[in-house]
Image (cartoon, rainbow, N blue to C red; front, side):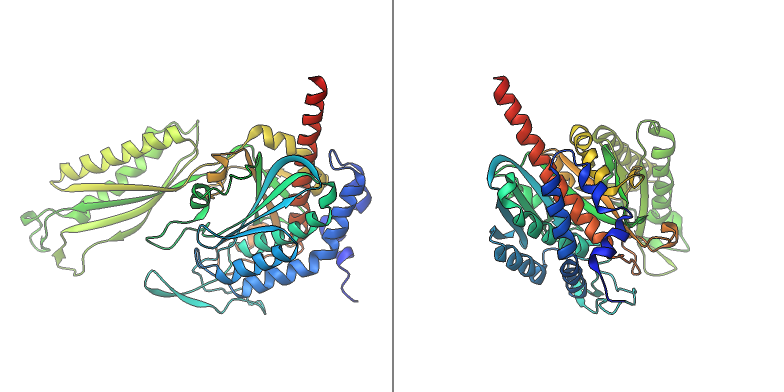
Length: 450
């Protein structure tokens, strides 16, 4: 049977076209029907873009090929395009045919230093050097899907430009997974370079594909939704000696072990876990090079995940104090460094409530889920510090499969069911249109009241 993208799309969503467009809250039936038609029409090309990006992944601040693909497409659509933002970022403006507010849509473009094991015919074979080591490069987090989705959304919204009451700013961001060592990048740098200015959006929307949900399902959480991520580095300094005579020196390895155990009591005994959860993990211990030599120093590194800025500051102080005092009790010293590359991703509660009808309508009955807090992190939080934002999840596990049995994001075997791309396109396009329509309607009512 020949491939029918319209049938595939309807099967993906599990609902008929008529209910989708007849229950629209803001956009109006003709405009919603046009979004639906364009989504079906462009879906095969979006899949092609996604596969092309997937086969040619690039690490953070090195997304040169991806950025060119994006910029060329946006220019072809006739948008106002700016390149080189935060190194390789691309920003484009779509000015609607009617006056109104500004809304931003964001996608991230970078890949991860992972050797892909998906077995796909378009799997990445790319290798590069990262932090002095040869590594594979692969889109095992799904940013290839995000980029292709937003490229498709741009084309959909251009097609209905005359009816858009306002402006859409498209943000294609590099280095969400972090810039190379010694470089700046990601959302924080984009914000500093003015991506949310001239014009300033009133709201921003972003999405992430996930194996945790099947195709057709959308998931959201108001308030703190994803954790802040801090990087801990603790250098324990002792006094080296022969392994046969530990009393002749100060053993930093034993002291480091005591610090590791002591740090775990912060989350389990010193922080009120009924307020917000906290996770602290030490992932690396580096020290010594011979079995019979007690070294001069040991370096620990790990991560802290929190959901509240006040709690985070308190935990930082507890980490420094506990490491210092445990080290001093052994005659050693501990130098603590804490970096905070990711803040808490906080979905604006008023914006989330306002847009829930849109997400519910796109997903269909029973397919919009309230997600639990996620302990992973997202630099989308830097946009949300400046303007209200809503970040949500799009399921990409094939229907009929148990998500718990599938490879998660960042796994070398992570797999995207491409039927989820159309769901993401529809969600982002409708969020933009419904937000602009509702904001324009509110402005009109306000002017009439005055």
